[in-house]
Amino acid sequence: MRFVVALLAAPLFTCRLFAQVPAPPPTTTSDQSPSANPITSLASEFLDHDFFNYFLFANGVYDSQPLTVGGRNVNQGGWGFDGGGGADAFKQFRDGFISFGYRGDYRDYSSSFYPSGTDQSLSFAYQKRLNRRWSFTVNANAGIFLYGGTYFAAQPSEVDYVQPNPFSSESKFLAGGLALSYRQTRRLSYVFTGNFFLNRYNIAGSIGATGLTGSASALYRLTGPTTVGGTYSHSYFTYQLGAGQAQADTFVGTISHSFHDRWSASVSAGVTRTDTNGTITVPVLVEEGSNLIPGYAVGHYSRVSTFPSVIANVTRTMRRSSINVSGGQNIASGNGVYLASENRFLNGYYSYSMRHSNLSFGGGMSHLTSVANAVSYTYSSGSFSGSYAYNLMRHLGLNFRYDYVRYGSFGSVHDVTDNRLTFGVYFSSKSVPLTLF
Image (cartoon, rainbow, N blue to C red; front, side):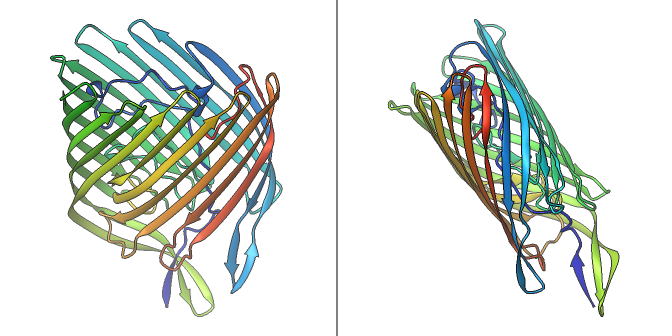
């Protein structure tokens, strides 16, 4: 008799979903903690100053997912239709800015293997300078990822709280934060942040997380382009189904530098200590002879772990192009199967915008090791996306996109790869081509 984890009840697919929000004016490094992530969008390469842009799109979609069933290769692919729209808005004030972005669509498939559903993404940011010394930023993000998704902030942070579930057809998240900055001198400043988040999944037995993170940073500008600092953050996660809770304390030192040719780089290094405890109940199928009997596996856990926290980021932003690469190791709140986890990651993107078109690529890899419940195996995933859009005439254009994903294996559940092709037409009020994000 053996146990088979009964979580594979939905197709494993991902696409890269990003907030369609313009990039705010760059904040000096002395005003930012390593966790302060301004919202960004490649669409900002086409937009200047204050603006409001709305867009509509209609696409044909084809998903190809080869599976091994009974020793045979089976392609569980399907055609579909995707339609939706969104809006970008940005307003610059004398002492701050406000930005808003929304993108939503409904995807209908002809294949019963892919139930229809919706993708949604909503972002908001507001920054204001209160006086010569004090300023604050408020931001909020929410989304629904149909068949997975990957969220990228402008800079990686010590806590990764957006983790799609590979077995769930829908992954939902909500996050909000407040950052308060105090400039004591021209060189020395302090940043205090507070963040709230939650993620939820629609597959039976998945475990969503709700959490809070608070941090305090001291930043010192050595020279005009170079800043050093230190950050302490404390995070608290609680999990659904009575699965327990986790606490994490992170200490990091940071150095950042802006180069003359529009390159900038930062490195943070330190240590994270986690304390987790609870009881996890996982739905399983008990294989007894030729019969599969549903049941549950129950396990108690209590662990204290310590591991390095290292994050590096390199960015170059030009008038019509941008590149960003980041990687390192941080803590993730979990993905519905794993709870609190050590997360090793590498991701990045490149974008080049011409007068009437945009070409952009993005990719990423993640490797999770549980620091909570005793999972004997690790989990890895990777993905790549490419997008090209061209304006045929004012307001109207064509777009093409390709997404690839590889989900790693979970015990007896083998790894899965998936491919998606998206092609169609769009309308943009500001004649901005659709971008990768």
